[in-house]
Image (tube, rainbow, N blue to C red):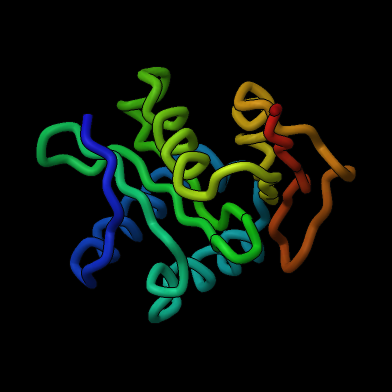
Length: 147
């Protein structure tokens, strides 16, 4: 497995496809039509990935996972691993690479209902109850680095 930053339009296009495929399979079942539409518009917006630091995990030539984060806010904005690559450590490797890049400190995420348990395994704790905004369900979570 290779983890590297994504930076080209064609890589962002591939990342968007992975995110939408994985979202539809695992997250959309929790959402209303309004939430699905809101998420799709958010991720498909022109220049979405270009605004963030984006890491891609590759298995050979295949993009297996994507983690996009805002380094200034230390906030994960998009974190998806293609279904056939679940439970292989790809998400953990992406998360560890982000931690390596950002160094010590806390990280935050708004976790989908599907992802709450995954983030808990990575060491995140809920900071508030599940919330809904524009049909998107999420639980605010925080990871505190242990020194």
